[in-house]
Amino acid sequence: MSVFASLVEHLADLLRPLFHTSAAAAAIVLFTALVRLAVHPLARAAARGQRARTRLAPQVARLREKYGEDPERLRRAVLELHAAEKVSPHAGCLPGLLQLPAFFLMYQLFSGGRLGGHTLLGAPLGGHWTEAVADGGLFGPSGLVYAALFVIVAAVATYAYRRTRREMAGSELPGAGLMPLLGFGTLVTVAVVPLAAALYVVTSTAWTAAERAYLYRDTPGATGR
View 1: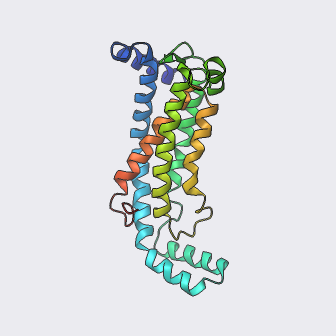
View 2: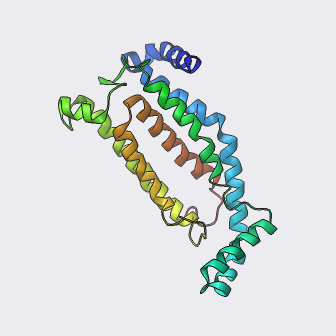
View 3: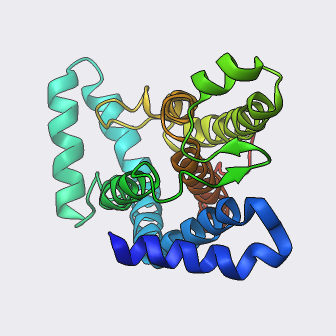
């Protein structure tokens, strides 16, 4: 843990001439981008899996017509098709799950007090949204920092919602109907974790949206409305 904390603090020292008192916040954003860059190969693997599932979509549609009145038989038939084509129906989920350890590691780092003395535009990196509201109200100096993060997350979540609905149209995966809504859960995360961890979450969420837009740009329906 101390290695990561030292790296963030070193980045903050390098960025201080540009960002002054918000250098630690800028270091968190940069560090998050480096973490996401390191796991980018996993996202590329997920994109390959998604393209493979898109290729099988016409066959899945025929199975749906054949077994539409028997959901359990349809589910088995779809799984058998994926197995025969050596395509994992969960290939797109695994890279996201493998990124969870990175999030928990960053959460422990950012909430462990090492960055507690730093701020972002006056908002303590070790503070929480409820504390910001209690100190200065929703539109106080610290409250406005959180308000900006909420706006960014809401915009990214709305974009991801529309895109995921298109990508998962007709999917037989369990919980496919709820997956487009998961992005809005980030709003809750930002509200309850320390500001430093919230910066990590917001940066990672925005990275994910941009990454998917690039990797899935050739997926049928990815650019439609």
